[in-house]
Length: 210
Image (cartoon, rainbow, N blue to C red):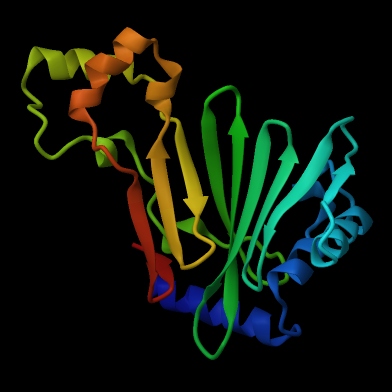
């Protein structure tokens, strides 16, 4: 029921504003969500990309920001040397959308934050839209959870670092467990046998990632 109410809220908010593609959505992004790029600069990046030029501008933190990919419903921005922003418009019903925004920071290991918004940038409660991955999602189904080597491996994974990626071609979200990248080579060899070899995949179905 809570999920149904959320969808109704999204639709009512969307109907009050004109239809947008991801470029327009990005330009209208509140400045507090991306301090290094003011609205006019975001528009300039879009214009440069659409004209076929290298879409790179100096930003407010003495670095550069580059628009790497842009389609009707997907955007990838290298916002700083160590961070990226991905935006994907996700369909609901009656040709309406909400936006998933993935912010990834490499410090030095990649770790992401996933947020959801209406098309007029109202934050949405994520609980109704997905369940974030935990370490347990990345443990191999065949792992012997009673073994001493498993206990030792899990003790090394004392941080939960996960990189999320949106797919430009479809509505898939992948989750890659990056905590092992923080470990030494010998420690990675200890944990590798107990982890799944591929990222976890989420698929957008009936208004949520499953």
